[in-house]
Image 1 (spheres, rainbow, N blue to C red):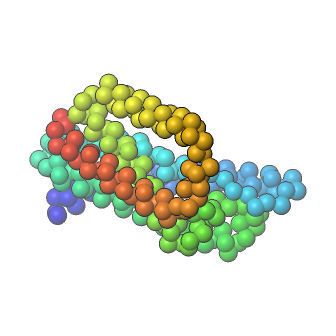
Image 2: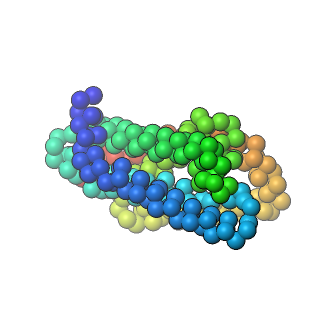
Length: 231
């Protein structure tokens, strides 16, 4: 456990990557979104206004997941840290940051509710389909989404370390072809209505649980790949 905590400290040596940059990206996206809401409100539009700018710091964690392996893994091996300890410590660091971000999002949502959408009927944090079940569901959604994006980046980096850039490219091409093939099949079956209905039925909580399952599968695959990856 102590060595796993050391990995967390190692990852947080540069707090900009895990803490300050995500908060800066979030703040910048928030300010730009409020400026857009102010322009719309001053034009006489009543709202409510909703935007997708809150996603910006979450997608940033794709690159954090990549950097967590490519930049820190070789150094950890020089310190005689086992791959298992590095794996657990790195995912724990990502989880801690996801807890921080999810908490910021929920607190922001409470502020939006208390101020009537910052006095402009504009909402950045409190998107209805995420908050419809309650603040706890919104917190879980933001936490799960952050960890999922991080794990995708981390899994991509482990694949690169184990097999090289060509296999990473082939994996993403295969995934894209699989997605296009699935869309073609749904179109041939005229089943788009059923697909949209399924997503609507799942809601934010259901999609969060599916996201956590996908995260667990990617994390397990990453660990198996990491065991044979070269520093």
